[in-house]
Length: 117
Image: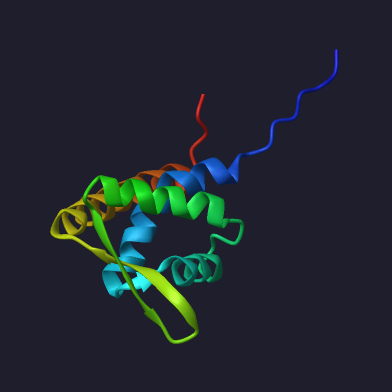
């Protein structure tokens, strides 16, 4: 019988944090999808694709966490710009609190140096 090697699924971990990160980007300024995508790519989400981002934006909008508006673009057709709502700001505050707790817990376990039996 062969040895089964399992690889860590980095994408699964990233997906779990993506909504909060998208809200944080939008909270900093009203922006559009491609700009969000490029920001995320330059900040560690290098594998994110439009096919991942746009459904999340739609879901955040349906939940009432963001609003969208078609606005003129200096480079061509109108763009859909996103802004955060008050409900989205509350969601983001909760995400940031929860994320801080998770980071602290995981760091404590990983750096604890104790063997787990």
